[in-house]
Amino acid sequence: MEDPEKHLGSITLAPYIFKAMALIGVRRKAGGNMFRHQLATMAILLDYKIIDPVMLKASVIHDLFEDAPGMPGVSREEIERIDRDGPAVFSLVMEVTHSEMCGLKETKIEYLRRIMESGSSRAKVLKLADRISNLYALGFVHEAKFVRKFLKETRDHILPYAKAINADMHQELFDLVADREQKIETMLHQSEESKP
Image (cartoon, rainbow, N blue to C red):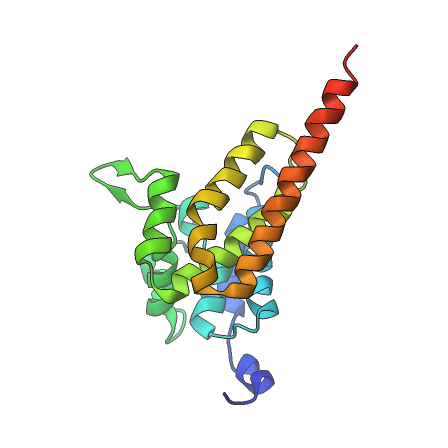
């Protein structure tokens, strides 16, 4: 591969970051907002030395069509005309967006299975980075039922595929799930002990 610094320097991200700013007002259960999550997902890809311009651009707006539909500038046409990568970026974003058929939105399990089993290699890696970001944020959530459900989804529907997609990301996901499971059990145990 060519010089990574030169390669990264040639990627135009600003218009995608501007589109992602529509997510600033969209709150997350763990605090913060969806805009920060988009940038964290991109940072995770960079941390794994993934510098594919389409993936980096898509990571910055990967939740845009789920969490800011109808906002000004959030349309297929707007994304596709940003630059020459626009059509591929839009396609990847749509691949990692919950789909709807005949008015029925796919379930979370169907969604994860679709990406992990039949998604493109880009979609699979982007989903792993997204889930890593979500698991870090999960450390700030104290609603045991939500945390357990999210961890079970990860263990059942992402981890079985993750090693074949990216062994290092698999290890980080595995470690994060184990850590969050231990923390939620400790929190629940302490809660029980503090009851009169």
